[in-house]
Image (cartoon, rainbow, N blue to C red; front, side, top):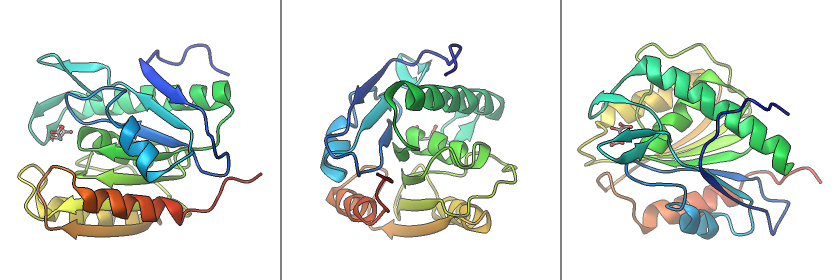
Length: 210
Ligand code: MLT
């Protein structure tokens, strides 16, 4: 176990159903470690929940990495923060004895989940990306065979253009991930459609090995 993993404020709930893959909950801008616990319990009942708080503050609002403008990322910061989050996840896995998690990320949290997939292939068992964008202008070459991704975009999302989410799906697919992309008749906010699709997708994932 590393003793140098960066300290993220976080919540951890142990699994009531150890067969379910653990869920890594990654909040959107202005959220915190408490934000997605309810959603996590709803879409993956009984799963262990690991929910860190982003370490960047933008006008007092927690985020997982810096941005230069809406949808324009500080990629140097994104790379460093992605590596810090990966170290935290590895450390939390060892501390809590949990398997590789499935990320459930919303907006800024979905963007760093996509960055984790591309920079640390194999760390996540899969990822449900809600309103995600392409994280890197020049994505690193990653092999993601065996990694499952659910991408839920909003057709009228003012922050994520349809071309951008389609490009993210294509990048992940080209890397070998099994990608399910739904372009929903929604904006940037989440709805019951997201909840139902995420729940069904998570329920269909293979169980943890006993
Ligand atoms: C981001 O900065 O990650 C995206 O613009 C989404 C957001 O947080 O608004």
